[in-house]
Length: 434
Image (cartoon, rainbow, N blue to C red; front, side, top):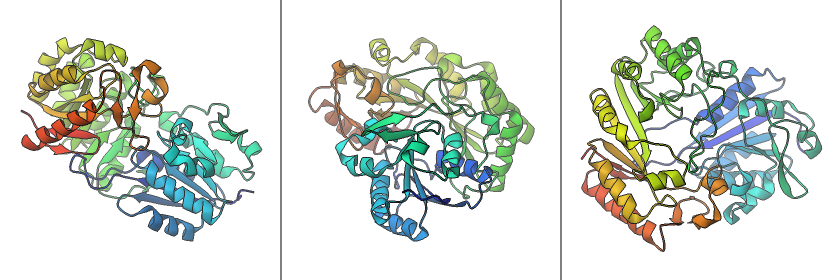
């Protein structure tokens, strides 16, 4: 029998120090779930958060076991799943009556089906594949946590007859109704603030996990964003990462950010990190960025090759890029982004894209293609012949990249980044403007 009380442990992991990564970013998804649980007003609730970075799984598991939670939930990303798998396995061995829950992008049956995670697959009771803010409070509120009772809750994935099966879909979040971890004082000071104004993306690129755009007007209001800015200011945060698919991919979301910034003046002397899609950039966006203290803009090109982009269902018109880059570079720090190892690309085509991107005069970030659970892992055709690491999910070989061609290109990028004064990380390479 699973426990019935409401002592909850939430766990997340940020990658260890990496020269190509920004300063510490709190796990916003986990804190949003924590805020939702606290806002639910549940009797007997006790909640503790472990937002880890450098400690080992054994030390964390011992500390969580001493807290003795009834429910343990982990926020699983490709960099955190290996640590969480060890922690959850140790906690289940310590007391099998605890309910073990996994959420986040890597909490998927196809991911747990990889051999390195078989122990976690065996001890995990529940996967939350959708929006945890509505699902997890109901899970904590339940006093009957038998498999049959949990199957009646919405938005869960449970093992039945040896197979992971989804219950009825959970309710979609209304952005303005979500509890704020910044306003609740859950997020510690330091690092970079995160702001999510809408969910999903209007594009459905097969390599990406953003998902389908929800109702375009389901966005945080300007008043709510102003409140988030005020709470971030009280924490002394000097930078904000816009955790949306793009600054200019949702007109209602952009208008709310613009109006909140104008009302509060919060961004006048702070950094804003955001993605911009070139095709949708307007004078209104440029005027907004002119009023930001230090705008840092990323432009996801992925490739300059039309055939490669079509193969991964990406829409992009390079013809519009030149003029827009000039306007953006006059007011912001700009980094273009491409992907190495995409199915359907080749080393020769990639190098053409790489050289064109370097010639733009912006910073450049090159990502190593990863086979993400809700993206290529689920959507790529068998003809892509993907071979990838089962833990890191880095592509080893695929259609157009035979043998060790990806490994050789990775080494070349490492060498060129060092020669250019850039940096190499686990999943990407950073190049300064040429």
